[in-house]
Length: 233
Image 1: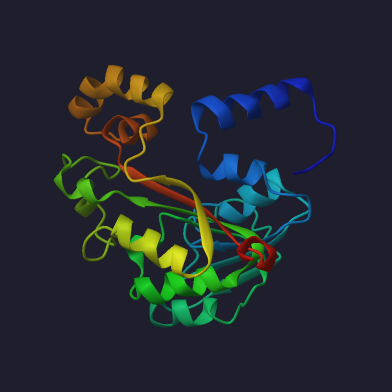
Image 2 (image 1 turned 60 degrees about the horizontal axis):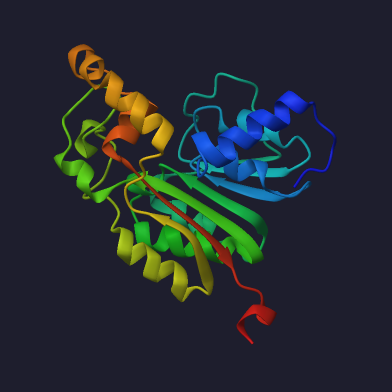
């Protein structure tokens, strides 16, 4: 974790996010990484390089995607890889035990070769390093259709069915990882309450935000750590 002294209000804000509001999201995950962490961001659109480097300016950031998606802020990536969907898993597989953290937030549901992509991501984590994966839950195929994506098929770039949660857990454990967080349908309390109160508005206005996702439990979350040799003895 970054040991640099920060203002009290920033520390309080981080504490609330990590422990109360969004304890398992991407930003909370970034907060707990060490200074100088080497990070692979799989599917790095929507200004993710800018976000990550703003939170961890001294990290070594590698982003990979199949296009320049919504990069409206300065791209601060140390390494930035754009490849085709057919070679996405292949490009990731070039990295072996290279990263302290691999992040895949709402990417795997878009991939042509899910199993190969996940295997490549797992191999890219060095012993002691961490993985964060988020993706639509399996039940989302039955959720109401709403602008902003609430039903899995609202997004035409989602492929096939949602990722199989239990199969992913088995795949991750088979690669010598300890699963630390496994939530098949995430309903963080604070945002669940907000989503409950705003459901009528979301439905009436045909609008989806994070609180809507929390109310329905749209998101699956897996956080895991690759075991070191000493951990397996």
